[in-house]
Structures are given as structure tokens and as C-alpha cells.
Image (cartoon, rainbow over all chains, first blue to last red; front, side, top):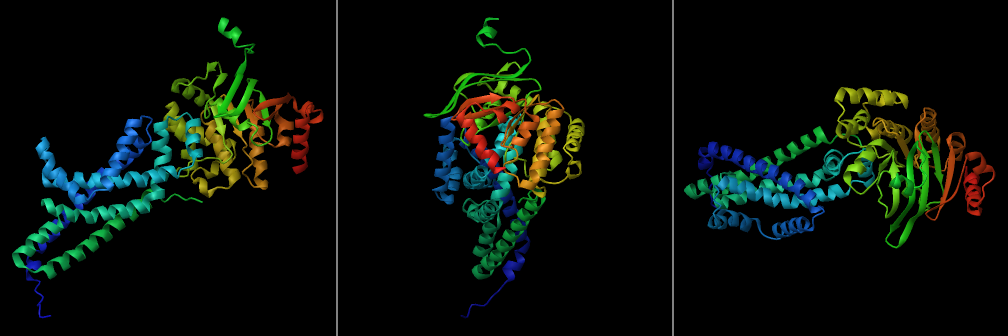
Length: 222
Length: 257
């Protein structure tokens, strides 16, 4: 063990690393927003009256959940341009994260929707509300409340998965760290530092979700 | 006129008419040849053993359950399978459930304002004024800002009654409104229902509260095996039931209370 720690490159690169944390947050928030939209939309289509839509959602969930994220993001970034769809690394990363997180969110949110009693839905219908209004106004919030802890851990996982987006050089913490490491060969210092950064980022995300939960889901239940 | 003639002799002031209604769950026949006409302002108590079809019957009236044969008319509207007539009927028919089914994420006031605003398009100020007035009427106005979980069962059921009344319904359906309540809370809910009856509301109540039936009902209907077995004014129903099954049922239920 005669490896001498030298944090000089890390300290010199600190402004870049801190900025890259914002990139990571940006990818994570963009991915989550898309995942929520896909999740809720998918749940609605998953129980649609049209069989083709149900199978489409089922197929989507199976495909995404049973293939590696790295392959998914490579497919979007390298294969889709051959079909004429060419995207920059950052939008690619957000879309890939959103699709991946969305597939998991569909199954999680669906569990929440199924936990809502039939009586709630009947009460809404008996009051003359349409099915869509019943879902939006009566079912959705208690359903999200029921599964919010699972959704939180899924989204923390999504946040950490942003590091895989370094594979297509999306602007985020891991890719910036890789650049500093390859210039300085200070692997231990660089990756040790960003490990700590990811820990902090996860912690911030969890606080963020706890605050949302406190704000929107704190109504009393028996 | 032809149409009306084939639809049997519906009285002019009929609020609900059921003609030869039949319903199956797969092979199981849940309702058999139900004929029932309820006049405006009439109070009906439906009773019978569990599984006799009484809940199914009232749930057909606002189409929470479909039916396969026969015809149901509510306030002159023929209840079909299309969303338009179903919604029209549901806006005129209030329902109170055994388990209250208040929305847990909304305050009492929000529970009462939701449907008038979203289903009838009433403005917020008007919806709130109506809600507060009706909460006052069920004597629970001071709980308007609380959430359902903070109320007792009896209070929740009174809120559920107010919530249904906020739609200004022409008919109220009660599906065993007191059977999930602790005994000491039954009276407050029954008193609310009696007050509503005295104001002239048309009501169909599935209940085993025979005291309520005696006091309020114009007719008591006894169901068994998915069919109407006996139908009589309360005096006659309790003092001289004609059918053996009715006598047996009354014997059991009155012994319990």
C-alpha cells in the first residue's frame, strides 16, 4: 500500500463535478417526469376496454423490465438514427430513463389503483361522475399515496441509473468524473468523491419525495 | 301511446318503475321478474335475508348493476345501456352505502362539493353554500373542514347522506345504511333519514331496522331468492304477514332486536 492520495485533480475539477451534479439532477427529474406520465397513462391503457391497448402495455412492460438499461439506451442512441430518429445524448438519456422508469411505474401504480376499494368507485359513479373523472379525482391520489414509498425507491434507483448514461456521453456526474480520471489517473480519489456525491444526491431525492408526501398525502386515514 | 300501453299501467306520478326485471350472474339468477312502482314522495323499505337480491335491486336503479331483461324507468327516463341515460339517471338518484364510501383524501366539505361542481357544473361558491346548508341539516356543519377518518361512523354516514343530497336528487337509495355502525350510532343516522322522509323525499331503503320501517315506510317489501315475496303497508306487513317465509324472517329479525 504505497499509493499516495492526491486530491489535487479532484479539487481542480470540483467546479466541473458540482456542475455535473446539476446535470445528473436534470436527467433524473426529466426521467421521473416522463416516467410518471408513462406510468399513469400506462395504467389507464392497461385496463382499457380495447384488448390491443392492453396487450401493447403488457408487452411494453415485459420488454423494458426484462432487458438491460444499457442496451435500451444504446438502441435509442445508436440504432434509432438508422431509422431516421436522431437525438442528442441528453434527450436520449431522459427518454431512456423515462421509458425504463415508466415501465416499473406502471406496475407499481397499478398495484395502488387495485388497492382502492370498489366502494370508492361506485360512490363516484353514483354521484354522476364519468369513469375518467372517478379515476382522476377519486382513485388517483389515494392510489399514489398507497404506493408512494415503492415509487420513491424506484425513483432513487432511476436517479442512480443516470450514471449509465455516461455510456453515451450524456452530461452528468459519472461522465465528467471519467474525463477527470482519464486525464489524471487518480481513480481512487475521483470515484471515491463521486460515490459520496451520489450518496448525497440520493439523500436529497429522498428528502424531496418526503416533502411531496408531506405536502400532498398527509391527510389522515384510519 | 302504444309504447306506454305495453309498458303496463304506470301511474302518472311514478318516480321509479321496474317492469319484469331479470338479472343473472352467469347461471345464477339474482333477480326474478321484479315489478315495482314507486310514486313521488313514497317511502319503501326493502327487507329480506342476505342474498335475497334486495341490494342488487336498488343497485339496478342507478345502474351500478346492469340487468338482462325487463325495463327500468326513473323519472320517466328509460334506463338503457348507454352512458347518456345512465348519467342522467345517476344525477337524479342519490345513494347511501353501507360503508359510507366517503373520499378519504377530501375534507367533508370537499366531499360534498365534488359532484355538484364536476357533474352538474355548479359554481364553487354555490356548491359550497349548498354543501354547508346540507351539512347543517344533518347537524354536522361544525365538522366541515375535517377529513372522513377523523369522524365516527355515524358522523361519516350523515356526511354521506348530505353528499348525496347536494346533487338535489329526486330519489334517495339507502343500501343498509346502518348495518356497519356501532349500535349507539344507529339512531343518529335513522333520525336523519326520518327527517328526510318527513320533508317528502322519495326513498327506497334496504334495511333491517323494523322500527324505522314501521314509522316511515308507506310500503314494506319482503324479498327472498331474488323475487318479491310480499308487499304491504307496515301495519299489515308486521301484524298479518301472508307468507310463511315472511313470518319466519320477521320472527328471526324481531327476536334479534
